Image (tube, rainbow over all chains, first blue to last red):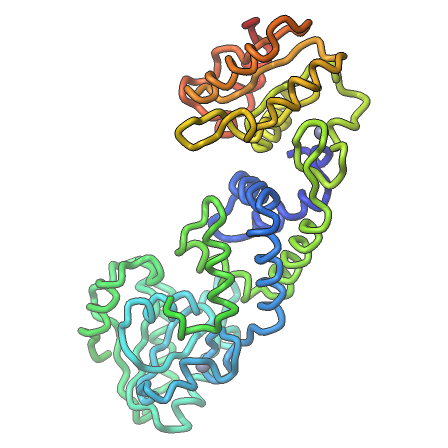
Amino acid sequence: MAKSIAGPEIERLIQLLAKLPGLGPRSARRATLQLVKRREQLLAPLAAAMATAVETVKVCSTCGNIDTRDPCTICADASRDHSVVIVVEDVADLWALERAKALNAAYHVLGGVLSPLEGIGPDELTIRQLVERIAGGGVKELILAVNATVEGQTTAHYIMDQLAGMDVRITRLAHGVPVGGELDYLDEGTLAAAMRSRTAM
Amino acid sequence: MAKSIAGPEIERLIQLLAKLPGLGPRSARRATLQLVKRREQLLAPLAAAMATAVETVKVCSTCGNIDTRDPCTICADASRDHSVVIVVEDVADLWALERAKALNAAYHVLGGVLSPLEGIGPDELTIRQLVERIAGGGVKELILAVNATVEGQTTAHYIMDQLAGMDVRITRLAHGVPVGGELDYLDEGTLAAAMRSRTAM
Ligand SMILES: [Zn+2]
Ligand SMILES: [Zn+2]
């Protein structure tokens, strides 16, 4: 849309919404139109919810999960088995495993995978924090639930090297996860099955 | 995601975003995650842009367009030919025609189409305002740029009946518009060509 058609406030909304995953320029225009048409029912509540989220959202200092409390709801949940830690690349993967009710354990969010090409080394991820967490004791099993991609597997092996000699059992998801597949796109049954038949590395 | 995983503030954001066209529950989760991860660069600006839009967005009292001023930018634009009025169902269609640079004229946004099944009669649309606008004089040509659907064509014929005897030329878009097609999904070249070869009704 040319700048001159609607006000700059509307144009700015389109441009910001177009940055969301899954929304291109066209769907951002449609979403904006829907928002401004449903000003009271949708736009105002969404503006308020976003403002609240800006104030309340935190990164968990223990596991890297995103929540409105620190430690996060999962880390603070006494009904979980905190001696089992599931290592995921991203919070989206944590959410996917939780939706699948895969295992009632704790997590560690890496914040990505090693990728020399993109300049992502160990220090860009939470690998050091993970090693410290394991060194601190109390974790019996570490499940490396990284994506079945080259970078994911490279990251898994790097983590194994860092933990060499420590008293922790390291496992990975069973090969029910399709090669090259991303956890967040898998159906919940596949995810739960892969978790059940996880194997020692 | 289960309610207990992240805070209720995050859950609410997901639920509201899932109401946007083009975003299902899964993409709303991904969008929410992206937003809370990029709190300063994306979430905060978007919250502010939405709050501003809540305050500033208006429906044009002349043509039904959505803008931050009334009369809207198009109605207030002296370089346009206001003796030609393009009737569209929705603001999305107005934006599509403007992107196509179809015609430098004025608009009238109906706010939908006649649909007895959905309980949408003439009073739910801006047809009365359109008739008054034409009766007020100054409009030489009315282009009925409604969708090439049954409801769109029914609405076009209803408008023609209401304008019977008035001194205005009524045209429609040329049949370059695919039967059953919706304006907002057409490429700009097709839209511009259909506008150029519009025919008398
Ligand atoms: Zn945590
Ligand atoms: Zn207007």
